[in-house]
Length: 587
Image 1 (cartoon, rainbow, N blue to C red):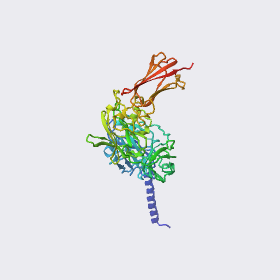
Image 2 (image 1 turned 90 degrees about the vertical axis):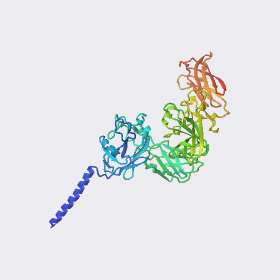
Image 3 (image 1 turned 135 degrees about the horizontal axis):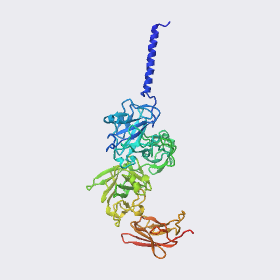
Image 4 (image 1 turned 180 degrees about the horizontal axis):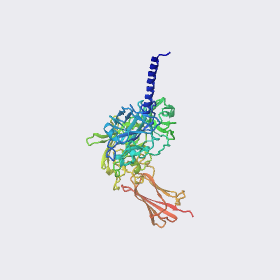
């Protein structure tokens, strides 16, 4: 028979186990235990407040809002919030339950934000940059859970980007879309900390990632850059990448945290400095599962140091329209691949020293032979005001060196500090018949003529929209064997909107830049019926189109018409052309 002491001991032991089980259950129910390890995108940064002043209604303190979009509660203790300059660690136990948000802010502002919702105060809260910054959330296991790299363009509102309004995520099911999934808050208080975002909605991503560019670190290492974050698992498959010219698949592929837009490729065979390679990426998906499509190939190669006249200044806009942005266009006239991370641009002061020195790229950016690249402070403004044939050739910098409206200097130097190109420009180099050069770029005429030769520069043609950023200049010097000529195609046209020969195209080709043109249409009786162009500054080649209407935009009768073209320049050279075209109509 068991003694009574055995039953007492058994009872006490059972009580201890029961108590432990009860405590574990209590802790789990109150959220203090989470056996799950958070995965990427379980918790998202859904609202940020980089620029709290001037206040619209919210407290004038920065904050970051995060939301648990998973079905699992997570204890945030020892999780980290970082920006590009600092990292803060959450030091308290805090359970973020599914479909819940929490505001993360500084200690002094926590009491104020408590009235908006649950708050975590951290003593070394990262100071968010107003213009651009990288924010990333890391779990205690070191897993990057979510990262965003914002800039002022994300507001998509010029007024709200000046401060007082938060940036809000639109669709939490699309966490990697960047600017296309973020906007300024539309809440009257300026933001929605601790509650549903004011712009919340469906913003599905159906497009696969694009391969933007790549650059070499050395002959055995390439960095691949995608335009959006990619899935870090399939991006780590080396067989997904291929280089031509006997290089093949890399030996290793390593996606780079926290954004996962970059992948490091360690090659099996070295690159040759004399080759431009084609690099392709296949089977890569973005973070919502869209697979890469046809935008999966880029050029790459081994860069060389830029030397004198390898890179030339080819076009500048120093007097933009009101609220506009300057731009500087460079052309690679060498046979080298040049890394723009190792090139800077500056001004020269009267004593010969350089100032406003600006690195052209903070990351590797390959500048290939015969390519153009444009630098500006506002890509968006350039897009709205000029024809951009190669948008990928336009790079935005936080600031350019000073470009005064009357005259100024531009110096290009390599990473050893050697000047490789310099221009001292003057506004009087513009075409003399232009009364107001505002918004008109100054174009280089000949790549091979001296940069400082004022006769090698002239105004961009009106027929080209007064600027050609990112592609061949309108005043580019063409082959001297070509004669100035005017041709009309077709000889007979029928403006009846049937999609066949509806317009008469008047094509011109000049022997030199700097010409102005007038085009007048006359009927068979010698009467002028349409002034098609008046004092148009002409590109080296281009065209005008006639739709068969007169100056009052009325239909003209069928018959033979004379296209009279007169061109002239400031040197007194004048030439006149008469071309015949027949206007026909269906009966």
